[in-house]
Length: 220
Image 1 (cartoon, helix red, strand yellow):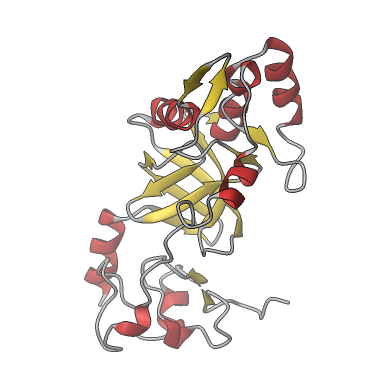
Image 2 (spheres, one colour):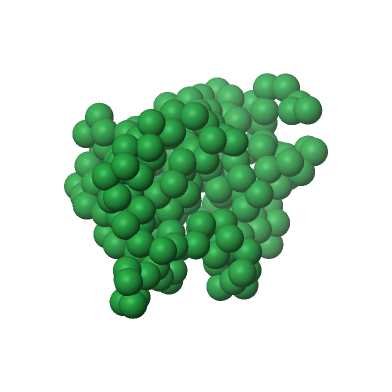
């Protein structure tokens, strides 16, 4: 069983602990990353959606695609270090991530290609103020707040949920090749707690069905 765990680590981001994730990634849009199949949402910022457009004068500007391109540029070939802060309503990991010691959320807001979310963090308010003053990115255009854009286009921008592990045979390993017989095995491997969508997670190990298996204490 140990060799399955080793192979799984070679194919997926490394979870040094429940809240630390490292590995390579690709940009899905201006604030979301795909780390070997694990979706990570940047904490404290919100970028224009991939298909969202803004306007500069009478001209339409693909601000969503530009935001995605900027994030791709920042992470190109880098080893990311992400500190998990939360899990959102779509079971995506929400984290503060750095690439080459650059805070990705900070860089996106400084470029004027993401807005700060003060209800979650005040870390990026200064960067947003500077981008506004310099009229960088979206601040030099007429744009709809990303949250408002998503609300107006709910079907087009609703994240797809992770495939349910419940559809797989209980005795079969997860698609990543990582399989733990029970929570004791997950704890012994240093992988617990396991979040829904993370390699090794199975609903059978998530007693309260809150998306976190083998947690050391029950969350309130």
